[in-house]
Amino acid sequence: MPDFLQLGIRKEINHTLKSLGLVTPTPIQERTIPSVLAGKDVIAQAQTGTGKTLAFVLPILEKIDVSKHDVQALILTPTRELAQQITKEIKKMIENVEGVNVLAVYGGQDVSQQLKKLKGAQHIVVATPGRLLDHIRRETIDLSTVEMLVLDEADQMLHMGFLPEVDDIIYETLSTRQTMLFSATLPQEIRSLAKKYMVDPETIEVKAKRVTVEEIKQVVVETTDRRKQATLFHLIEEHRPFLGIIFCRTKIRAKKLYDALVANRYEVDELHGDLTQAKREKAMKRFREAKVQFLVATDVAARGLDVEGVTHVFNYDIPHDVESYVHRIGRTGRAGGEGVAFTLVAPKDLDFLRMIEKGINQTLEKQVIKGVSIPDREDYQQERNDQVKKARRPVGRGPEKKNSADSSGRRKTDDGRPKSKPGASSRGRRTSR
Image 1 (tube, rainbow, N blue to C red):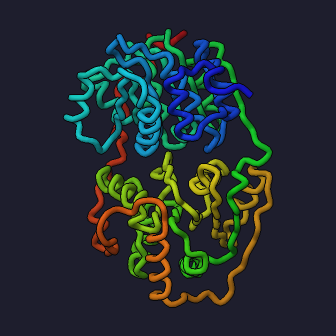
Image 2 (tube, one colour):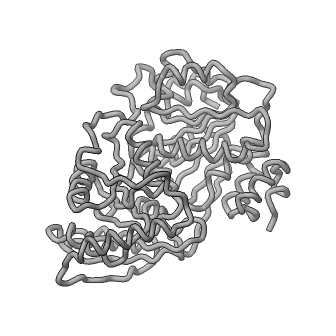
Image 3 (cartoon, one colour):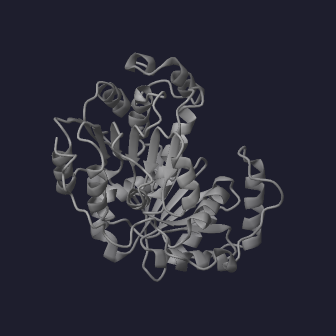
């Protein structure tokens, strides 16, 4: 198997990869990097956790011309969290590379600060569709210089209703650009988008015998809607996670569960689209530093969420598609570590469970918890404190503060998406190749 140098990645970046313990390319990287370096359009179908981010980041960095001050690469993502994560990965890779600049553009940021940064040399822009369209309308960004365009998690952009915005953004680029599309699935709408904007693309598909990571123990806990909350508390008390993410289907259910966890004196934050960007970033920072033990999140908010040390994932609400399930449980068992994923299933959820088992080609272990009861909270809290102290990761300075019901604040809708569709539709003047 070739290494990154043999794939065409320069020594400086290869040194950074080695320092991060990345020596052997993953299958998606091995197959994608040479094609992108050769200038080909690429459709890459791969699940989360396969290393797809570096599959497009590394060849983009090889092709950037630092002597030019224009935007040369545009990476579109469905959520601000994923935009932040990709930007973070790029910044790691360019530590030993001089002159390459990257800017994240997403809703919730200070617009004036973004405008100031856009006036400087920004070779790579990582953006969500809503905020990028805002800059296009303001005429504060010129995409006619973009030579490489990446549509990351294209199926999620479809599910979130972003395809019309993506259409308008692509219109602002020149037809000579190189286009890369990365998606876990390829529904008809995504195939139509690819056919419209890509030239003779190379299709790369990476499939594993098991879609999900083998290091993750997956357990289905049979319960009822009425007993679901008590069942979750029982699992928490029994398994004592170091860090755990709890997934809910909607913002309302996430908020309700968050309030219940706070009322039961758990260290918890919430992450969903109704929070301002500042509150979302604060919640992520506290969770990464293990200042809170649990994060209650929706699927949209958790896209791109990559936190070291997550030992448990709880699907409080069963996901309604296989891709969301794979994404959720992939938040644990990172970097070769072990993890546990519990999925709470009520009788009405059985059809979704069968769909997931068929999709991942795996029959999940089933458990039934009878006589749900909550152990003594003081014993649990003492063990949790000892657990944090023994952890190798930093947990911040000073004593930990408990969450309170007031810490959430009032919500403001700020998801970075435009309130109305842009006047211009797909005109195809620049994009019909």
